Image 1: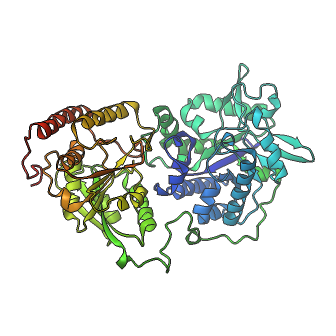
Image 2 (image 1 turned 60 degrees about the horizontal axis):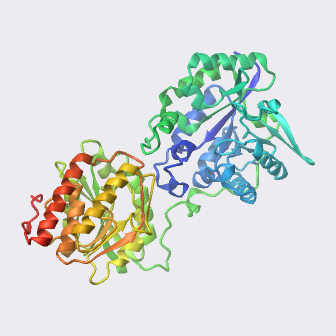
Image 3 (image 1 turned 30 degrees about the horizontal axis):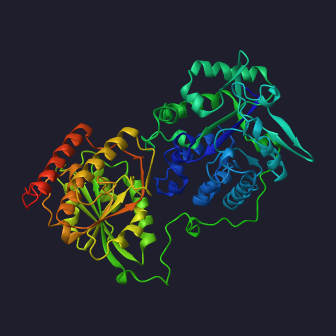
Length: 559
């Protein structure tokens, strides 16, 4: 084992915080995801204890406010807590004044949680470039003792090769240490070799030789880092991310613990604070408990709000088919919806398990089965999303009924604005991403093209000229819907319901909103079958409107 001391830093963050997934996951929705911070962090702490290593943990201020007990636990085990900013943002996403404000906000949150002075920083996304050295000045002026945000890889900082190693950066009367993650010199190009992603992606023999060469050659410490989520191979898969990002994030997660064991056994590591001889001073801050951080958790009903008994009862139907991976996210989201609408509406959630073949049925009963505001309905076989929604409507005891997508590709929080639109004379309110005031995020071009083309054809045939005919996110007048002669049990039935209502003289309103790509799980729609189904449905509507041929009055897919 090498006796030369090197540096180990750990990014304490959850799987949904990371840069590789930020294209499809907004920070505003972090609180909806299944929290697994404790899993990776506990495994990290156990591993470091085994090898008697004290590391620097770079932590988001958001994490400190959301899980203060966890941050305090890390600090109590002898590890250093340092800042990674408040949200997972890069320096290019903030103005200089916003960057300084973010430094203060994150530092205050971390010191409250850790009860230790925060003196170190690493940027959360990407790395500082030559244009960003002003940030080191700002850090030094704010009292930070070190930074680890410069990563001179490839040809970055080629004119300042000394920035590849630990060095001091001076800013007038202030100075700050910089500890760049280490790299290998290959024909004048800097190749990254210090991060967990590179240990998982690059050939193991190559990485071993590169680290061993650094240990033999340089007096400067090898600066290594990894993320706590890299020790959680069972984390949910975000399939909406681009494939190259999924490879970057998920490949070889199951090997990460073994990789770390190998390096921890060969080399000696310490924290940056230990290297600089900085004692992690205790602060006088009183760390808040999780219960006091109401901004991140569902708010309890205040005494001035109306009691639940005077709120309007509303039923919310959630069709579920092979959605086991989505249900924790759905549960957190619906808790937020219920808390936000409490006092105005008394919500009952009706989950229809549509013959799922995975663990959806068990998960539904485990998560929702014992809740008084939840009903679980089971289809013994898969009947289709439209049949599931109709089963929920039949089970509902309220006149106003909503349906939402289990994957929350439409934000259920929008129900607060949609329900009031179901006024007298209105029979259905439907979400409309293709409305001029609506929009889409990260939805594939081919899916948009098919859906918009279908809507264009339905506008030619139906009376009410809507922008969107295929959305499952709706508010219904129950008594009207139950009178409709519906035949299609699957995805096609969503459009059929709207079309039958239109042709029967019902009034439909559109609510412009945002459609986002499904983040968890996979779509169940059969594209070719759905295309041919729409063509048949268009023909049926044309006959009904212009020839007067009407379908049977009883829905054929209801037993």
